[in-house]
Image (cartoon, rainbow, N blue to C red; front, side, top):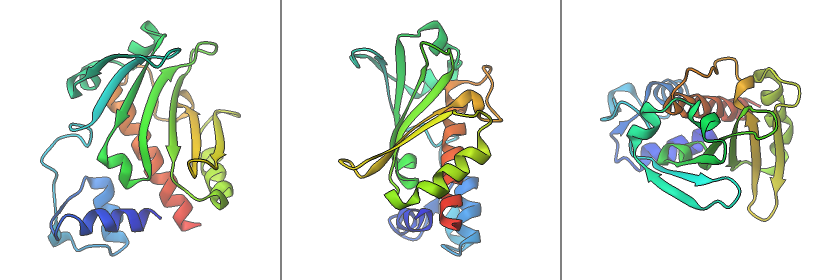
Length: 193
């Protein structure tokens, strides 16, 4: 699944593709393209062109459309200071891994940082998805996974605090990069079967 999505992304680039190191290593390893056709991206972050919203958790009412600088400069702890808000981020790079967007918020009860998303994988992929989540996250019940038959995708919520590389000193940008990396490796693991 990841190979197909990345291959499509490469094909749409007319033979010259800008890949970050994670995707480049994977593409070369899978034989999707030669290193001579890959060049570094023009931006420092995959999320520079992202669409970012800050919204109320209870009503989902938009507070503000934010710039890249907001996630680059704000600490993830912003969400604890503004517990009634969530951050919604949509990016073309998420499409490469079969995700439309990722929302981050702080759980009102437990005070943990949660990532929420829809994952485009088939229903039959439950076992490899759960295996990856169980092996990678440090908590016992640090995720919720539910197949949504209407949308044909997995609703996945997981606790960022249980990711081994998470800490409250991260910027929101670093937290989103962590989520992207986590999901990329999840798809890689599902593909490996």
